[in-house]
Length: 252
Image 1: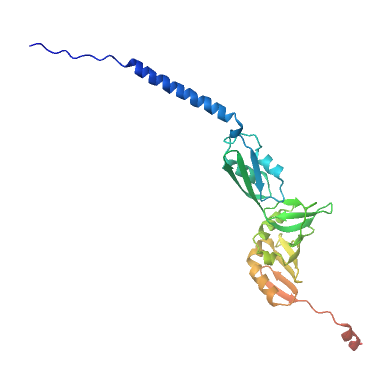
Image 2 (image 1 turned 90 degrees about the horizontal axis):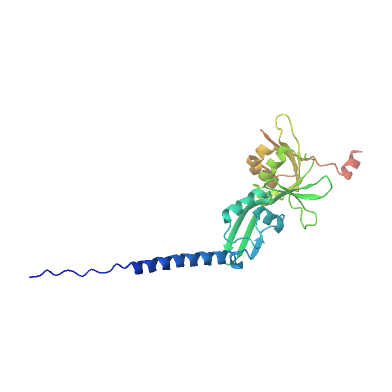
């Protein structure tokens, strides 16, 4: 009885070579497609829209973002650009950037609110923002509905501290402040004097004002105009009414 010898199949080298060739061609096709895509207009920024800005111009925001129409759409991080805008522009409190393919970029900024006004050395009105930035209002429409800072030195460190504090005061209370001037003393270098639209004269300190707001509000709401001291101790003295003409004539 003879043994059957199995038939040996030929190796499929050619089929394996074809697969490798197809894989290489496919890879080259992807590379070519990527090169064509990233060099086409569809991979570039086609438009940039900016919203929320009043004190800062569109050009200043774009410069801080280092972005321009025609830049690579996928060549930057939205979080990183938002951070650059916030750190590069003092009036900006926050920035949010969004991408929309193909090529559309939007930037929405939130500026610090106006907390006071000041007349510059050139006699021009400027707005003081909650973050401490000072913005020239020349050529802009504005309403002086916040306190005016008078007699402050430009480099006074207490002015920036005051600006941040005013941003925490409720708008209805802040609107009653008419003028704020520095009034330092040995005990309170940050002492200030506030004149209100309700005709009160208030002496307090920047470091104490946050805690004294409730007392100030209560006195203004319940008492006649007068002088109010809000320091270590709180005192209130109503204005002494001036005698009328009829009283003067009676005394004579």
